[in-house]
Structure formats: structure tokens, C-alpha cells
Image (cartoon, rainbow over the protein chains, first blue to last red):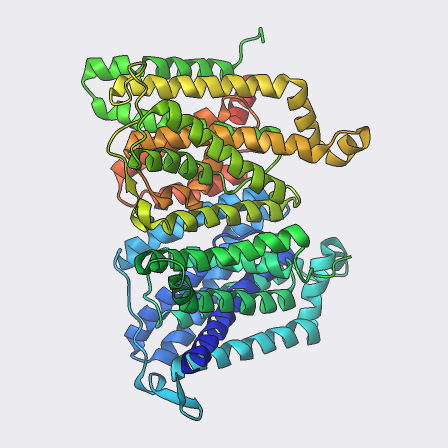
Amino acid sequence: MLLVVEQFLNGLQFGLLLFLLAAGLTLVFGIMDLVNLAHGSLYMMGAYFAATFAAWTGSFLLGALLALGATLVLGIVLEMTALRHLYGRDHLDHVLATFGLILFFNEAVRLIWGPAGLALPLPAWLTVPVPILPGIHYPAYRLAIIVVALLVALLLYLGVMRTRIGMLIRAGASNREMIGALGINIKLLYTLVFGLGAALAGLAGLMQAPILTVQIGMGENILILAFVIIVIGGIGSIRGAFLAAIFVGMIDTLGRAFLPNLLRQVLSGAAASTAAPALSSMLIYLLMAIVLVVRPEGLFPANRR
Amino acid sequence: MKTFTVAKAVTALMLAGLVLLPLYSQLSGNIFILTLFTRIVILALAAASLNLIMGFGGMMSFGHAAYLGIGGYAVGMLAQEGVGSGFIQFPVALAASATYAVVIGALSLRTRGVYFIMITLAFAQMAYYVASGLARYGGDDGLTIYKRSDFSGLVNLSNRTQFYYLCLACLFGVVFLIWRIANSRFGLVLQGLRSNEQRMQAIGFPSKRYQLVCFVISGMMCGLAGALLANNTDFVSPAAMYWTRSGDLMVMVILGGMGTLFGPVIGAVVYLLLEEFLSQLTEYWALIMGPMLLLIVLFGRGGIMGLLGRLNRG
């Protein structure tokens, strides 16, 4: 029972983290029609910035805030120097150009921080277990991730659906020329959206950093997961990304937690412990394949046109 | 066919270079260059196979490295089980790639555009995780192949020069096949589908069937490359199918010139030589390679072949 609740929460926490990453990706994808493979690099940069700034300032929170700002700026710079020129080009061009950016970022990180990973230690007040149900404790930090991510999701929803700038973003997604003709600076809008996406990716990275080590290439596996999520959820749909992210997070976590025991019923111990992680990773891609075959536009296609 | 162009001259020069390379290696005593070029030729074969579906078929597969792994694992697993004959290993590698391609293609071709890119990527990642889960065959760590495929005296794969020429012959064979396919009725239908699928369907062509056949042929060609690659490195691991490898193959095709016959070969040669050169120059070679890719995408329309074509006109 204890294990089930704990793993369930772990799944929720991982799913929400994936949502932060997928939200930025789906915004950029849905609005600028840009396939950004380098989104995972921004996630990585968020984690590296946080580890560095936290070490400098000696405060986890201050480091996180500074890292958030730094990824925002990095995203804006990246958009203005490189990605802006890719709008309206073929998706294949996007894939290649941002593939090049991944190479660049991985290498730049190796040059600046060295090949060894970094650690981002948590302050003491975030490491205590918190009672959530009678007799069940859960780490405060993971709980904090859940709260922060839910808060961000809510803000994002309100921002896109209820504010003027959100309205402009949605308008820009449905008709770029029209909104430009109405006197809106669409270029600036796109830059802002990209910066927002970068900051979300950075937030996901810096929050994940204390749980895993900060290392080169950390953004790549999770980026593919984020792509799977937006494809399942429907490209451009934040609601779809949210639901799909929770779903994928749950499957991944619960699969890893419970599949080894299930498999041990039919396989030998060693074979089960090698096959289980592979199988739970596969489950997600299997899910995506099924969704694409049954509903090629994703589960919640953004209602365009 | 009759006129002289810069692109043709460069292609001919490169092909001659590839054929004469073992001679140079022998004379100069530089064995490393032969090993390097064996790898280049094999990956050029893989890139050419990707070009068949990308350039001629208009199917942007981001999971082509899966076949490199499948072909490689077919060889590795059979060798592990004591089946050393290449006459069994290679047909099995091709059959396994074809089977995978039929299933994946049938499912993926229901989608289009960026969804197609993503679903092929997802399937390749699945293959990657399957390979990681094969405890009996090394799992994550990969599988060492202790004995290269045995072609009972016909060719000796352990002989560097013979193996190189085998790979080169396979490359030429595949490029020739692609040339024949591209100019056949089948190939013309495919290229028609690439330009306007709806119109072709209206004329009455069963588009998916044509595309699937092309997808399978391309997969088998890449499976062959996988089987050769495993023999070249005496090793196969899940990393062979990792998505960055698929990205590498795509870069080679685009760099050389998508939809041209020899473009992917040139692309593979240039990309891998550049990688080799830059990595000797500096440990941080990707720092240069990355932005270079970006620039190629931004300014180099049509890849190297496109560039050479413009040279000719200008």
C-alpha cells in the first residue's frame, strides 16, 4: 500500500515535470510550427545554471531563480540568432539545424563544466519527509515539485486563455499574416513565446537536477519523451500535453516499479531485471504507436481552423 | 548524360578515389585510412538507403538507424549461437530488416509530415530498448562478435582489403539498384507521390502500397549496411540504433544532396571525414560541427550536389 501510494506520487511528479518540458515544446511547435530538438539542451542548461548559481550564492532558491532567468535569456538569444531564420522552412530543416544545436550545447557544456557531472545539493528543509496520509511519508522536495509544477500549469492555462498576450499567442497560432496586419509585432511575440518555452524547460531541468545528477546529454532521453507526449496529446494542445504527460509519467514510473516483480513470475530473476526497464520504456512508445495509428492527429488535437 | 558538369566530375573523382584507396593504403603503409574508409563506405551505404525513401519517396524517416542495429544483431546473435556462415547471417539480416520495415512501415505510413518523423523515431527507440533488454546478448553493454561472417573462401572478411572491396561492391550495387528503381515506372510513381499524393491517388495509384514497398527495400539495404558494420567493428550494441545515429544518417543525406544519386555518398564521405579531421584538430569538435550544420541548413540549399550544380551554371 505504502509503495503503491509512493510510486503513484512519483509518477505524478515525473509526469508534471514532463509536462513543463512538453508545454514549451508544444507551444513552440503549435505557434511557430518549429520542431525544436534543442529543447532538451535548454533543459540541460537549466540544470547546469542552477548547480552553478546555487554553488555561487550558497542558496538553492536564489540559484534556481537566477537559473530560470538565465535560461529565459538564453532562449531569447537562441531564437534571435538562429531559430528565427528557420520559421516557415521545412520540418526536416528544423530537425537538422536543431540537431546541430544539440551537438553544440553538449560540447559547450563539456568545455565549460567538464565531462564529469555536477550535483545540486538540496537545502535541509527540503529533504525532510512530510506526512501526507496517516503513516505515509513523502519527501518534501518531490512534493514541492508537484506543487510548483501544478502552479505553473495553472498559470500557463490562465495566461494563455485569459490574458491579452495569451489571446495574441493563440491568434498568432491560427493566422500569422492576419495578426501581423492588425499591427501586432509578431516577431517580438514569437521571441517571447520561445523564451517562455525555454524558461519552462529550464525550470524542469533545475527541478530534476537534485534528484538525478546534472550531466551532459541529460536532456536527450527526456526530450524524446516530451515529443512522444506532444504527439500523443496532439501537437499545439497544452491540455493534451498535460494529460498525456501525466499518463506517460505514470506508465514509466509504475512500469519501472512493478514490472520487475510481475516479470519475475514468468522469467528468471536476472532476465526479469534486465527486461523490465526495457519493457517499461517500450510501453510508452507502444502507446504512442497505438495512438498514432488510431488517431493520427493525437488525442486532443488543437482546434485549428 | 552527355554534357560535362562539375557535379559529375567531382562524383567520378570521388568514386575513383574510393576504388584506388587500398592501393594508396598499401603503398603508404597507412592502414588506419583503410579502416576509416571501410566505415565511411558502410555508412554511405546506409545513407544511400535512407535517401531512397527520403529523397525519392518523400518519407522522412528519423529511425533509420534501427536497421543498422537489426542487421548487426542478426549477425551478432547468430555468431553467438554458433552459426558463423555469412550465407545464413546476411539473408537473415535482410529478412529481419524487411520484417521490421513491413510492420513499422504499415503503421507509420498512416501518418504524414512531422508525425511520420516522430513515429519512426519512436519505433527506433523501441528497437533500442528491446536490444538493451536482451540479457542473453549483452543487454546495454552490447555483444562482441568473435568471428566475422564466414563466406567459405569466397571472400575473407578478416582481410582488410577484401572486406573493403566487399563493402564498396555492396555500395555500388545499392546505388545502381537505386538508380534503376528511380528511373523505373515504380520509381516515377513514387516521385509523383512525393510531389502530390492526392493527385496520384486520383489517377488511381494505391499510394500506400507503393510507399510501403519502397520503405521495405530501403530498410533491407540499410540492414545490409548494419550486417557489414557489425563485421567491421566486431561488435554490436544498442547504441547503433540510438536516435542520434539516425540523425547522423539524415545529416549525411541532406549534406550531400537529398534526391540525388550520389549525393548521400558524398555527404557521408564529407561528414565523416570532417568529423575525423575536426576531432584530430580539437577535442571539442562538435563545437564547430554543430553550428556548421545550422549554417548548411540555413544557406546550403540542395546540399553539396546543389552547390556543385550552381557552380556549373555560374
